[in-house]
Image 1 (cartoon, rainbow, N blue to C red):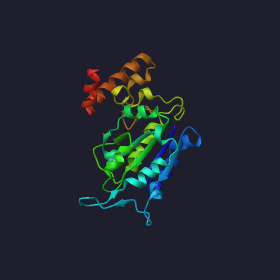
Image 2 (cartoon, helix red, strand yellow; image 1 turned 90 degrees about the vertical axis):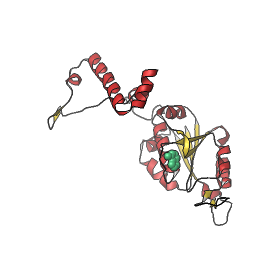
Image 3 (cartoon, rainbow, N blue to C red; image 1 turned 30 degrees about the horizontal axis):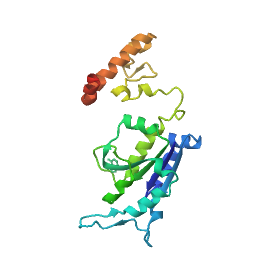
Image 4 (spheres, helix red, strand yellow; image 1 turned 180 degrees about the vertical axis):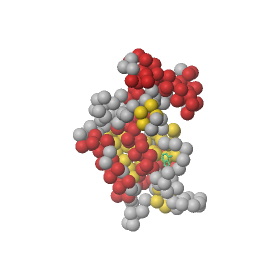
Length: 227
Ligand code: ADE
């Protein structure tokens, strides 16, 4: 997979991904990530990429031209999945990550300031929000999307890692996990996990997933029950 990120702050992306599993996947050539500073495509001698909003109002608005020029500089951009990170987008879910992980080429635009010229939207396929809160920039959201997508690409995580047991796979939260010691400050590991009874362990874990989801995320639980 190839991911191109369009941003005004490349240093919010590059050092972070270098330090992560995404960095390892890049090094092992399982993915290619390319960060493009769309200020380089400014049409202005001062390299400005924003301007005052027509009709007045507070703040600055990102201009359409540098973004479209930067987009068109990307080889094969026509066939890529083109995303805009914005709180106005559709909610980002594990199922969205699974869908994105199947595509060959993604382009992610990170917004800033008071937003971007509405005409930018015509050049992209999908707007994505990582939650009902407002970030100072789309870079944080782009990193969230990249991390959750890249870990699903075959060969990126260890072979033992199982996506089936991820939180949200099958629409439920994860079961509780324990490791040594057996007792810590009086808190014991549930007996069933020490039993060596695979069937009993599986049944316990399934019931824990249900119980935890019901208690913490009634919305997910109801959806699960309805399927
Ligand atoms: N940019 C600013 N806030 C955002 C959010 N919640 N999701 C995606 N992009 C954003």
